[in-house]
Amino acid sequence: MKELHFDTIENNVGESLGVSTWQTITQDMINQFANLTGDDQWIHVDVEKAKLSPFGSTIAHGFMILSFAPKLVTELIELKGIRLGLNYGFEKVRFISPVPVNSEVRMSATLAKVERDETKVKATMTITFELKGSEKPAIVAEWLNVFM
Picture (cartoon, rainbow, N blue to C red):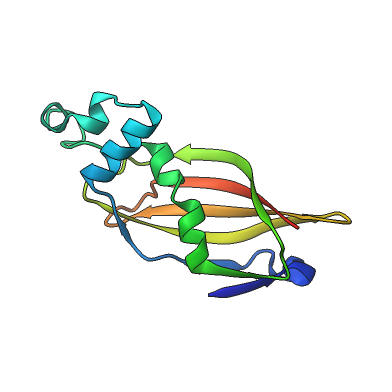
């Protein structure tokens, strides 16, 4: 686990923050996400119809996979000297490869940029969701967080 300190976070720009554990994406997870978001497109939830799709099975929502970022980043970094961290947004999100049901993903991160003012730090991490067994990643994005 990489330790990032509020006072010296700039020293880590350009460094890898590590790689998370693999996460298995189940149909139950996909169904729960569909229920919560109302995105119940057949490619996600209709197991029989999805068998006839180019993917051969249901696939996870791209936003579902992206939503694992807050959970998985806690496996990578420990924040020191920070009272509060907030999601600030995403830049350049790309959904590169579909994530079939029962596949595994993991997240890696690099600290790409740090901007500081008197009270806060805005940190940009480049995150990549790797799809086990695939040469291409599932998702690549720039994730912005504000630390105070």
